[in-house]
Every structure is written in structure tokens, then in C-alpha cells.
Image (cartoon, rainbow, N blue to C red; front, top):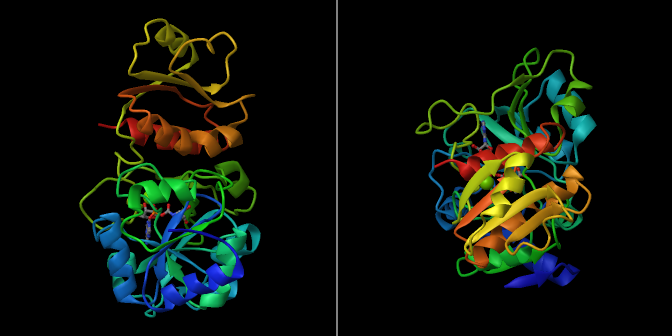
Length: 326
Ligand code: TXA
Ligand code: MG
């Protein structure tokens, strides 16, 4: 059931969480499937509902930095990043304290932690008084949800409550940085906070490791499987020139998607775009919603233009490459 975010419903969601139930919640990135991070029972339910392998660890969401410090071992890099980017779409990998059940981290000694900025989620974290473990609220491997209706469509029968926060702000998942070694900040997933924004606040060069070497073990690099975020339709990636060529041979079950709306192409059936003006923030915001929408329209193939490789374009291209992986 989709619940509008008034105080009565927020209280209801907090009660569900305290009873080890699972609630879908809005964040500023994508919707999450949330349960009490300190309860093994609740966390087990999250894995079951999502169909997620137990080797893929979860992100823990805290009300504020002080609450996060109860769960992690701090260092100067974490301190700096947290003060700079929290609340917001940055997940920090830190050494975990014993309070966090092993199931949350797939047995790893580290934990992924963030303080979200989304207003309703902030309120829920405040009144439920527990940290929330939450992966994106999609069946494992599928496109992440950016609206309550996306969660309802794919997981609605398995959960009692979906807290509605409208369309999410960023539309792609948080940036993940491993900050356990103060001298070696390591970017594990591209997201709304891009490398240049991060580097302005680092004393050491940012290393990047966004691909996973062993997909069958709990991840040191994140469980970013090479195939992920995939719609049912097959995804092909092209540059702008190839996109214009592809439109000429487009068939009924094929969709073509550009980053910026092209007046020349709008008369072609099956043509879609991610932004009016090429703004990459807008394109990121629309990306998952469009992929879900094209699936609903039963397109079999989606040919989609890669974004410019900068800013949030890095996150868009990362998600597109995983969506296109076979
Ligand atoms: O924006 C987001 O981060 C959303 C919202 C709901 O907060 N959450 C999200 O969660 O994207 P999920 O579970 O879909 O992706 C979390 C990623 C996974 O790839 C996981 O393997 C990685 O974080 N991760 C979790 N704990 C880790 C750890 N201790 N070390 C390395 N990677 C970790
Ligand atoms: Mg996910």
C-alpha cells in the first residue's frame, strides 16, 4: 500500500520498523527497502523480499553523523567526508563496530553507511530511533525505483507499506567511497557526488575501482555485479552519431533514447529522450523511470545514447553499461 507521508503514516511506518517489518522508503537517490539494521530478523526479510544473495552487503542509513559514529570506527578521512557531504548521497565504507549484525555486511568487517537528506526519511529515522538497512527497493538485478509506483509494481505484493516521497531528487544511487585507509580514498561506485567534487576535499588522489573481480564472494569492492540495473528489454549503447543512424532503421518493438531531445527525431515512433536541454542531472533523474516505462510498454530492445563522461554522466554511463551487460 502506498502511504502519503503525513505524521500518522510516518508513525505507522516507525511502528512497523520497530516490529521488524520492512517498509519501502524514499531517499534523495532511489527508493530503499528498509528495516531495522540492528535486527537480524528484519535484515533477513530484506534479503528475502528482494531476492538478493546473502553475499551482497547492505547500506545502513543513519539519522545523523553522531548516530553513525555509534556503528563505525572513525578516522580523519571519514570525519572530513561526513562533515562535508552528509546529509546527502555519499555512502562511506568504514570499519564496523560489533553492534551491526554480520548479515548486514555479508560477514565483512566493513560497513557501508550514509546519512540521507530526504525529508520524510529523516523524519522516519528520527521517530523510529534505529538505523535502517536499505538496499534499493527493486527485485535483485532489476532497475532501481525512483517513484513509489515503481516499488508497488515490482514488490507491492511482498511489503505492507511504501512511504511516498514523490520522484526522488537524483535518480541514481549514492556515490560509494571506501574511506577505511585515510591515505587511500577509493571510489567504488559513481553517483551524484562526482570525483571532482570529492577530490576538492581529499588530501590524497582518489583511486577508482568500480569493477568487481570476483562476483561470487562478499565484496571488498562493492557487490556491483557487471550485470545489474537491467530492464527486461535488451539494451544497446551508442554514441550520438550511431543514434541518428539507428533511428532510420527502427522497428516496432524498438525504442531509441537520446540524452537531449532532438527536434529532428521527435516524429519517429519509439523515440524518447532523457532531458529537454541535455542537462545531465535531469537525464539521471529520468533514466530509471524511463527504462521502467519502456518495459511497461513492452519494448524488446532499447538503443540508448551514452552521456558525456563527466559529472553525473559518469554515473549514468556506469548504470547503462551494467544494464546492457549480458
Ligand atoms: O543510493 C543508494 O545508495 C540506495 C539508497 C536506498 O540508499 N541504496 C543502494 O543500495 O543503492 P544497494 O544495496 O542497491 O547497493 C549498495 C551497494 C552494493 O553494491 C553493495 O555491495 C555495496 O553497496 N556495499 C555494501 N556494503 C559494502 C561494504 N562493506 N563494502 C563494499 N561495498 C559494500
Ligand atoms: Mg541496488
